[in-house]
Length: 369
Image (cartoon, rainbow, N blue to C red; front, side, top):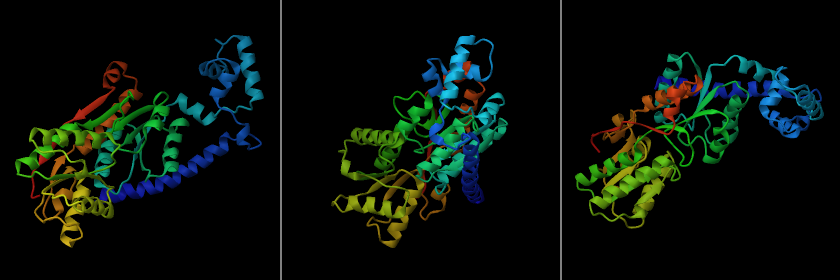
């Protein structure tokens, strides 16, 4: 637990430092009149001058390859639009920062701290600095980390789980080096490191069926996430193979909070549906269910069959201990950062092959539930 507390403390401190850095950076890029509305981006200058962004960059760097007429036109537009080049970013482009960012939804779940541990090791093994931060569902914090890319303070970014939505990702993909960890988005050509979630969902369901369970509930995470969707597909497939009818009312979503998990489970029970087996999206959810059973705030029998996902230490310290699908969390973090660094060093032959879904092996550990 010591590293969890350390990283959480580091991330809180980092948020303050990043905001201070962002404020300083803003001061640098403001015009002499400190009028934001008067400022223009290099893309706007290129559009107004009817040239490419690369041509504007060459003019700013006094590249002799630019024709005098084109250079004069661009300089005129720069003056008219009051464009001020970002000298800090310009200098950083000449000398790589060797800094990358990993963005996590939260650090309260040990699932994420173990991924972060692997990411840190991969960065250090490759002589890169890494900033590991959490967003806690706050968009302004996410924007702080994204601005590090835009200002060249960081060279690339790893988004873990649901820390970024598809729309924002589509905006960033063409311009920045990005790797996804644990979640992918159909239709987006990005490197994503994950497990075979459909297979894992199938295996968890099959194990409960093997034990004689036929009324299996599923407590999921975010229903829009790719991992949840894939695991439910595996769950359905296993039920179908066993001749057990699929009941959508036996599936309920819940955040990793006790009140949410309790409400989800009791909501299924409240419909008059029997439950003799249950699958949870995380070890944390499973531990909350055990807590609720002991407190009698969740109306389940004490020996209900239960299988969770993740393989964190939580599954080992509960009473009873939890049967879990073990994800290689450390390796997920390590591999994600390694793939990002491959992109950054431009090893085109290898990096080109790495686009798409990279699946790491998972396994089940049978315990007392």
